Each structure stands twice: as C-alpha cells, then as structure tokens.
Image (cartoon, rainbow, N blue to C red; front, side):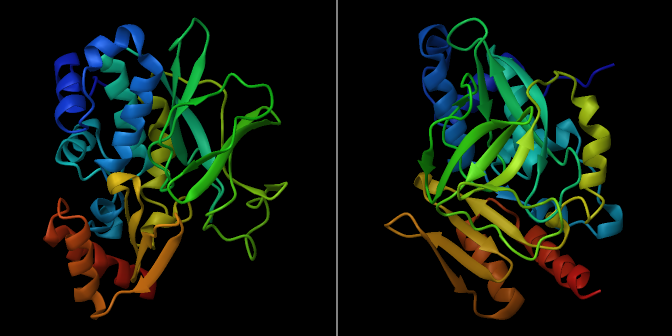
Length: 305
C-alpha cells in the first residue's frame, strides 16, 4: 500500500498562499500554470531552508529516513530540510494542487556518488499534452523556475542568484551542469565523480521518467540518512537560504553571502561553536536553538572520531 498523501487540496492551497506567498493559485491553474510552477519553485527556496540541522541534531547511530509526517511538520514551520524532504514535499504539494507530477531518481556527483542518492520532480502536461518540466528545490543551489525538458540536446543557460546552470541530455540521462559560481571541487575527487563538458561541471544525473510511488525511494534514502558514504551531510554542517532570492549560508564555520554582483563572499565566524550557533540562529531564526547546538556538537564529535 502506497504512503498517504502529505497535503489535502485545501492544505496545499493554504500553504501556497500563506507560507509561500504565492497568490491566486486556484485561478492560475486554469490559464497560468507554467508561471505558477515558477513562482512555487522560487518560493520553496526563499521561504524554506535547505539544511541538515534536523538530521545532525540526532546522534549518528539513531539517524533514519524521515517519515512523510515528519517532513510535513518541518515544511509547515519553514525549517525545510534536505533534498528528500524538500523535493518530496514539492511532489505532494503539486499533486494536491492538481498537477500531474512524478518523483524521479537522481544521483549527485559532488563529493560522493552512491546511486539514487537524490530525488527530483517532473511535472507533466503543464502547458500542453505531453510536455515535461523539471523542478529542483533542494540541491543547495538555486533553481528559481520549472525547467522545460522538451529540448533535443540542452536547455538554455540560466543564472539564478550566484549560479549559472543548464540541463543537458547525455547518454540516456538528464544532467544538471553548472559553470559560473559553481563551488564544487574539480580536482582530487574519486574516479567517476568529475565530468566536465565545455567548462560545465556535472552536479547530478537523473532518469528521464519517474513514479508516483514514494516507497520505491525508501531503500535509497534509508542509505542516505544512515551512511556517511552515501551523503556528505553527516559530516558537514550546512544551512542554506535565499531570502529575497539572494544566497545566505552557514557552511561549517563560515558565513557565505551573496554580494551585489551576484558572487559569494565567505567569512569565518568568530566565537567558536557558540558563535556558529548564534550566527545560524540569527540568520535562520525558525530553527530551534537547541537543535542547532545539538547539530554542532554532533558535527564536532563525528568529524573528530
């Protein structure tokens, strides 16, 4: 039996209006569907947080994949979460609004590469029968739009916040490629991780079709939420937001912010772990202070063991 839906239609419309500040969703479903998707995608970045505090506050031996109910609770408060939390919530939200959506397996190729350690969303039949749009609200890099996949070789190049990106079709997969603003390492990586095409670096590859059955993703994300070899988020503290569509991050002991030119600037956070906790709370007040402190303590313990 498949898992129950996360949102009722009424809950979904209320969340979109009250939390995401996207107006007139009911009316726009009839005649403005693509721009409605764009606005929801943007708001999932600006109003929610990509973060692993909620994961790292739990001692390593007790970590597990969150339930649909736990994901919903963190979405409603604005705390957000990691890719599984945010993109699964996007799927259920759009489904409740009446969009034809599926969950799609993907594999990040940033610092580890375990098959199907990421998930994205496809929306189908949005503007016309047979079209497909990709939604990516949870990779730590912004995607302030729904990306049409109805291209032959590659999408246009986009610039959102600090990152330049595009999607390409390559060897039967859909690849996210990044160039200007890409902060990912390009050397000293395990074999198979690094793929650069004409200066664009692969961030992940994804399948071309998906499913409405979330239970197909359970084994993959049981691994992601318990095995540090399957995800970098067990050993690195990361909190990422885009208030006003501009990047603000805490990564380990640094604050990283987007300047007026659209580039990132990093500064060390003074004051040790107390200073880091205070900075996370200042920038992301929705996160409980107790959870922040637990996450930092576990991060220190796990990286020193």
